[in-house]
Length: 276
Image (spheres, rainbow, N blue to C red):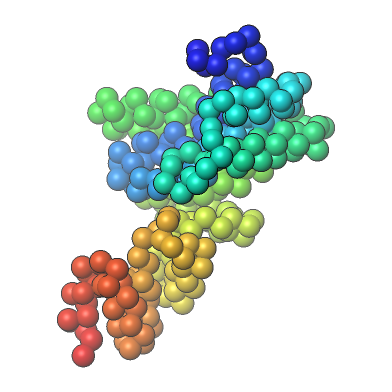
């Protein structure tokens, strides 16, 4: 903001709203889950998606406060380039501009509703307190903050942030509540969510419950929505176990062979043990 401070207060507000957008979408809470080994670190593709979600939120806020989208576009133009972003944490300029415009236009379409400031600041507070408590070693207090996070995501979901259902599921999994997590994953997926990790986590829960067909179908969805393994690496090993549990050892061995070729050492062990 200091670098861009040329008297354009709307541009500075857009930057601030972008950072708040990370909290609204639950990106900051992931720091706690990473520390607890509850989730894997984000890939470059996930990082770019998070930046676009924050830009969309910032565009929405800018519009609701009466700011011109040209101020946001000016900021984006100064800090980004139109080039291949495949190996970057941040998306290209064109993608950022489109995400911001989407949020800005949505604010105009939904002009009968008002942004909920309480949701914004609850999200910031919940995320920050949970991170501080975990880093200070006061893990006994972490659970309470995670339950507060569930409340925050629940309110966000009511405002049509359907990704909040996925975030609630991840928090509940970290608390050992598989049934609650399954319910939230169903809500996310049934409302059009296509994030591959959501299908992966639901498949894992289904498998634990002995619902092998359902688990197999979800692992197939992981491959469908993430064919290059940007979000979920090597699901073939899990698919093999689903097939084995369903009595299809030939199919299981084929999946384990693919998994082994992609570097899964456990798949190689299962091939030696079960495949002839």
